[in-house]
Length: 389
Image (cartoon, rainbow, N blue to C red; front, side, top):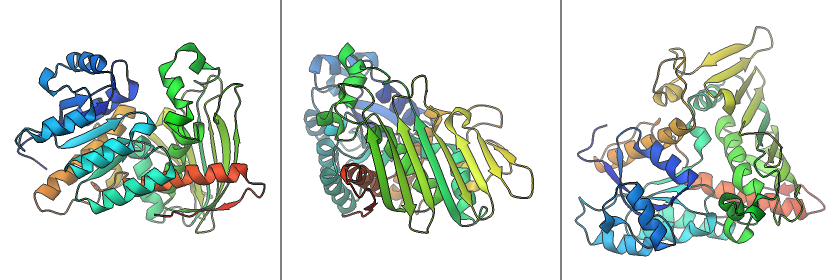
């Protein structure tokens, strides 16, 4: 859908050397629907200015704080000011800028998880639902074309009723106490004041949980969690296992670790139903394997003509041309933008465009963290899964 002008981004976070800030920008800018117009890139004004210079922004629109950005941008004509606030800060700086952005009339894109804790999540959930603005939560992996193909095949009954879900996210980057070596990423992600009380499960376990529900189309009803601290001196979990019971009767196993020495980011999901099964892994993200009881396994590939509408809507290149992590981000941002454009035009967005994670996914992710922590501390272990809003 065309628009008279690009959507203008005001970025919060993503200062010099930021990994995730650059990824967000690369994804958002890929399809020409967004442009970076302003930013408060760091809590340190000099670093914010440095990043603004690196991005060749107008110095007048590089701000020392997000409060200053909101105030100054609102002084500009509507056609000049930012449209969307993108927040890529540590978890303890999610709630306040998101609430203020919504209050000031901006759409919001927020890096996961939703907030620092469950109480904050409920506050933001209600604020989003009370607003008329669009909200995107970047659970990146739901943006992959073959993940969307798996989701559509299951929703259409191709593998029958879901019986079993396996999802695993092995990382090895925290195999030693990097936070004691002046590693900025490790320092905040292992700090409960900035990351939250769940470490590995809050950082990557929430991705695995979201993928399990998103692809299967089923919702978790109860969990049993066992968390570990593998590296001495670390205050929050860096490894864990969660058993899951789904409302339809399916069972599931979720494993996540940031101390699997040598592991990269091979997120993997396997789902088995009454008629067949599907398997996907991030290291081979353009491939989906379908398994059947009475015929050979099928290898489905991105960019081919036999895929469903969800996969095709989120594929850019012909088969054999790899699309990856940045494109998955871009798919989320493109669908988000298409919905904003449709809203402005008074039109109903296509269902495929509405297929991006939002605040409902966010509060379920925070409920997952909360219940995992409670289950881990409980002698009974099994904990009923409830989302209190």
